[in-house]
Length: 166
Image (cartoon, rainbow, N blue to C red):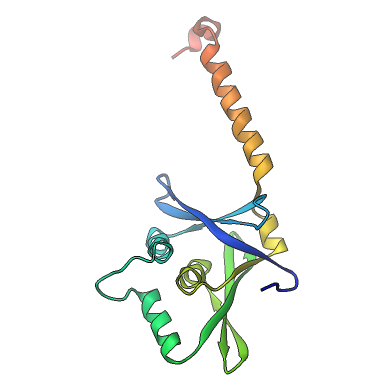
């Protein structure tokens, strides 16, 4: 489903950041050229992972329960949209289709994504939000130059550091 002014994205992966003990959900654009990393809590990351893996749990988790409620009420999630980044906080909307009409609800991106991966609802970002992400070509170049720098540093003669060597 194409929506004017929005870029479809998909969950490319989840990364645990050991420094902050947070999870990073990484969204990827359809051309595979831009990524949008969003830092979320570890619990929220786990909820997304369980949804992606279609994991069966003995009792419904919160997002599973919400999906069950929506299904019982014949309400579908038509899409989610990561709408803005304000003061380092991402915002999202969940669009519920009720009797043929879409109603937008404010949401944290992590909850919206957790619901989307369970229901198959499409995920979108505004172009402005996606610009806050990372161009993959630039990222790969930086990683390559970082590896090159590591190689050069390893090849340096320790004597050139004089009294500052470790």
